[in-house]
Length: 273
Image 1: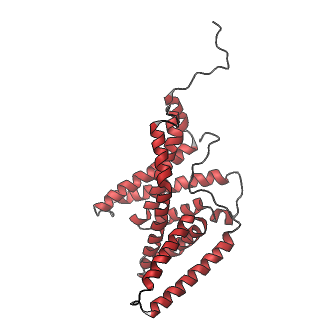
Image 2: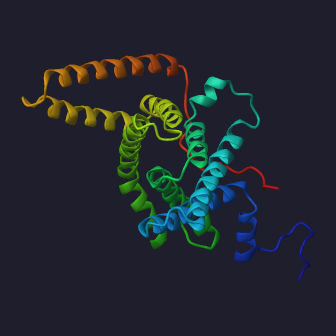
Image 3: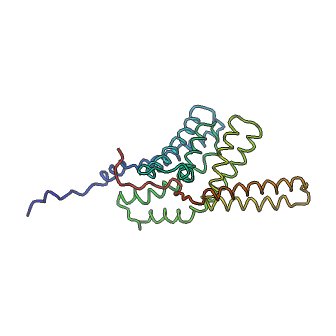
């Protein structure tokens, strides 16, 4: 039998394949999302025990947001490392928007209500990465039972949970607004930054637009009740006018821009160092 040629290679074992996968920047992105979920779970457990002010509760909160910052930072790095984007381009990139909000919450007093949107996104990113990268690496085909169940779950629930995120973000805006009215520390800064974030989301996310419209319909029905004073009705109409004018102005400014999917997995063309 002829000896193997010098160019022949030995098939990699599953362990070697996993080791190669772990060296990629995309795996670091995946690990970041896993750490987000771990941090959210442990901080939520602390909140359920009403012990959010102890060391470990604060640790897990900061850990979750540090992981968020890393994952979105990786996506932005991969997107713009070979280009020189304008400030407008970066501002209209929803990855940059979520990174900015993560930095805001990282620097503020821990608030459980800020975590669910990031946890939901991380959960679906983890599922997708497991299906598209980890399962094939360990020999599971895309048609395997586990892969099919993951794909079915993502297909059936991704839009529903994205819609939930849009509503949670609006609820959080209302909470921040009332915190600002009570002059709580840092609330006005949070309101300004988060208000700008919601403005961008309204222009770039169909889910946020739908959520806002649903809220408007519900409030219209409540305000239309005969028991509601005329001054409240007029105030509501004035508020809607102001918001719609601001949204129209944002639409004109954002029209030339295009945005990237929120924290989508960075494609690999090399190994991370």
